[in-house]
Length: 206
Image (cartoon, one colour):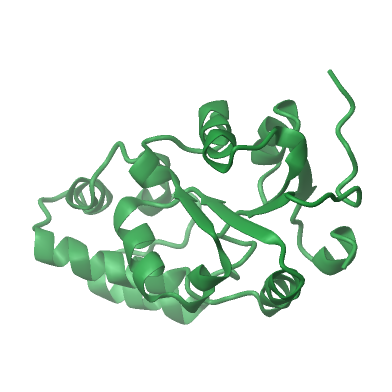
């Protein structure tokens, strides 16, 4: 495989492609999980909970909101309840990482091209696109739910590259999951693994 250029070897026309969860957003607070618990009668924050058991299908658009919450709660869920739970779900992931926001501000100030690629269900992506202040940083927003594809499926990266009209080597990709980083690197993207404690500004040479 061809050598992947360093993230510090930047050129005009390069794109910075950010993940959302645990990169732009911080981890949910206990109070956020508590609100969802109160609304559903079930604890959701445990790694083995039904919230997580069906999450990939929801993120990838295989389940609509009513179907996802019905699977989570093991009962029928009407549209109005699903909307209320979707709103609580979006609130769960709305706490921003101030260090990443500073990086986005710095990149925007110097005129860099910014795009987002997130595994996110359809309704949450609609809520954030319409209402979240962070969405204004980005020229392009790509979400797994509307696309019907999720990371680390290489097809979602190929779709983004086609839409941006660039090669993989023209993109610096920032994500918190190692499997997503590996998939991106296989397509030639310059990837930065966003691990706890990372100095992202330093990693990007800012």
